[in-house]
Structure formats: structure tokens, C-alpha cells
Length: 136
Image 1 (cartoon, rainbow, N blue to C red):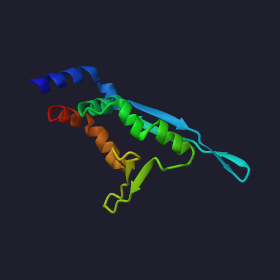
Image 2 (tube, rainbow, N blue to C red):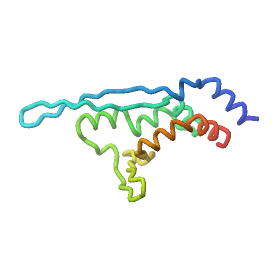
Image 3 (cartoon, one colour):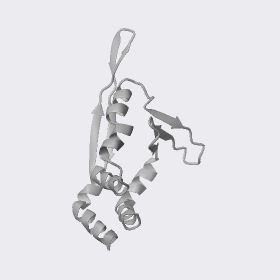
Image 4 (cartoon, rainbow, N blue to C red):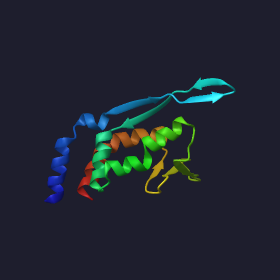
């Protein structure tokens, strides 16, 4: 019953809109080269933020701890400065060609995905969410 009541609680909190929500953040890092200043706009996309926050809650991951590990303060600040040391990279030799990155504290692994994988994940996100709620 606890799992079912947990699913009912989170299902009420999450709407269909939450699974489709997308935030776009633009960063304009400044680089100085040969006494000239160049600007480059970097875009970051945050998809279904409330859904992924609920998933982290299911695994007792506190938002503060998560943000401290992967950003935005540490990671985005370093990206603006052109310093990528906040993430360490593990090269993948797999078929997908994805890259894996580890947070500086080693708590989290991030994986790049192809457009096809991205679209597939967006398609199954609601069912995936329901599955992990019912099978903790």
C-alpha cells in the first residue's frame, strides 16, 4: 500500500505539462583573446525539471547536495570561464559514442545522449517515472 499511496501522491503533484516542460538558459561567456573580447552564447536546456526532481527525491537525493555536486554554481561558473575541470571525462568506446562525465566529487555520472535517445527518453518518461515509483 505504501508504494501505491506514494504513486497517487506524486501523480497528483505531477501533471502532463510537467513531463513536457522545458527551460532554456543562455549564458554569454566572455573570452579575451589578443586584447579583443569575444562573446559566445551557450544554451542549456532543462527538460522536465519537476519530474527529475521527484525521481531524485525517490532516491533520497537532496536538491542542495545534487546542485553542489554538478552545478549550476560550480559547473556553469567554470564553463563560463572556459574551465572544464568541474567534470572529469571518461571516453566511451561503445557503439553509441556517448561520453561519460563524473562530477568533481565523484558522486554522479552524466552521460551524453544522441538526439534519437533524447526523443525516445522523452517519449517513455511518464512510463519510466511510474515504473521507478512502483519498483523502488
